[in-house]
Picture 1 (cartoon, rainbow, N blue to C red):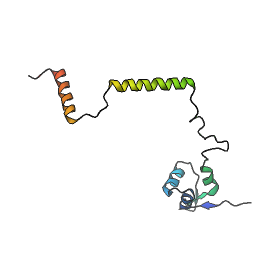
Picture 2 (cartoon, rainbow, N blue to C red):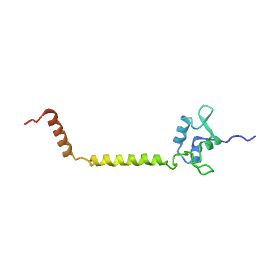
Picture 3 (tube, rainbow, N blue to C red):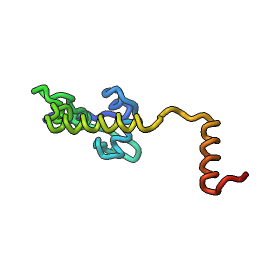
Picture 4 (cartoon, rainbow, N blue to C red):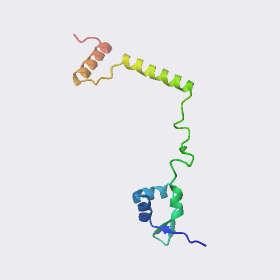
Length: 120
């Protein structure tokens, strides 16, 4: 029977090249199982640490987030093109240039005149 190898939080962090704070966050979020040995000693089984690391690609070459980068359907392409056209039309109708302080003062004065009437 093979005995499990246990690591400290610092050793676990070094093994995965992350900070000890990251390991503590994983423990607190229950993403990583840790074991208390005595009152103040925390240990992590190496196999639990290895199970935490997921491959980005499987042996078949498909990413674990399968479908995220899938080729869009013709209907999806039409939807996206229509959305881009709407965005471009919206941009033409509105000025996205930054306003100067003078522009803002002028707008406020104009709005006050419209709501209260001219002070002259």
